[in-house]
Image 1 (spheres, rainbow, N blue to C red):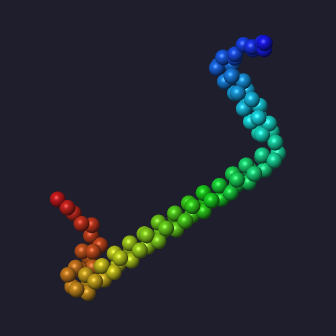
Image 2 (image 1 turned 60 degrees about the horizontal axis):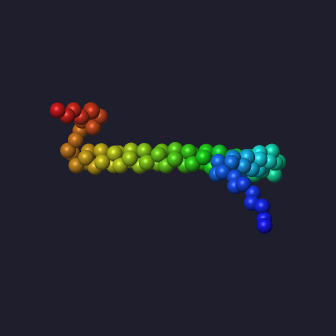
Image 3 (image 1 turned 30 degrees about the vertical axis):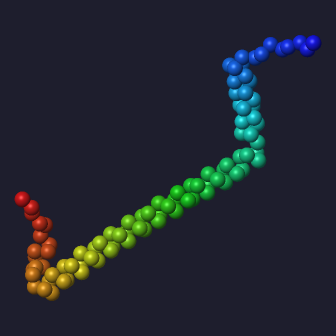
Amino acid sequence: MTAQRPRRGRSEQRVTRLFTVLAVAAGILRSRRFHEPVIVGAIVLAALAGLGRENQARAIARIVAWSKSLDQRAEHALKRAGRVTADALEQPTRHG
């Protein structure tokens, strides 16, 4: 006959698993082999974020310039058609 070991409860198994995971994580965090790629990854992410902000700023500047050029073309077309005077173009429009 074999002697049966008492079964461990679920909570005891969870605690054992938790401590095992924490011990492994602590070992990984202390490892230089872990630190180097994490630091390089953080630098790369920061650089990519900076590039993204620069690209966004350039895109907004292009949209603003495009919008201004459309406004200028419309003003010139209206002036050529004789519909609007130069003073009227500079006055803000009032609605109401």
